Image 1: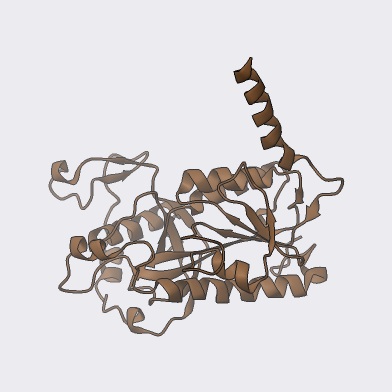
Image 2: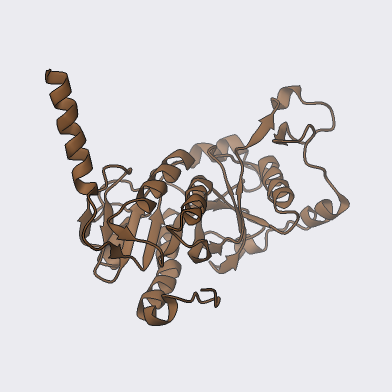
Length: 318
């Protein structure tokens, strides 16, 4: 009896915040962040904190079905913290997309997080807008110590039985890696994201990532940044779009460079990886600053010109 009563009370407590309002709140922009180090304000920041403090996301919305309570302001900007990894991001975004308290049909979604970057593509603190988000987890694998001679990796496409083919074109692309971009001041660029549950590091895996992105995009994508959650986020948004809950034409993915994905000359991947701990990346704070500064420029424009962008995207799509 006591167990049944407890279960019933628990169900009511969980369901209470989910009861729909008479009119769902129309959301203009959803900012998707992945981790926070401590509190939402006032301490060492994670990906959410600058958004809360600088965009005045002072309203806390209980979100028991997600990883972290939601934050929003009076201008129609809502921030979600998904948690680290594709499973948590997929669950959190699906839960938000189905939440009856919000009208997300016109909302723009901005993924704003930090990442590792290929030093051939960009510098620390740079901001990278992705056109492709490629899944690095769906694969077949043979331990590198057991791969046949001549294989460059034991990580294979899910439907493949050999590694991604090398070519003269790929070799030519890799040959001039003098990393000029790595020495530039932070800049904004386009480049594609490889989303993987494993934090990988080193020149050989960098080459694999470049091949993997090229293969899965039919040669159209160019690998630039590493990430963990974006395929989970995009998968949920894709399904929510099928259910007419969100609009995929309004999704933007921004990753900013907190660290390089391979070490500088003279340092082994193992030595460098030992230094790469969350919050201790060489450009951790500059990357958080860039994620907010570049992302907020888009958010502010969308909100300020909502009458223009509510029904038509900046690209002219309804």
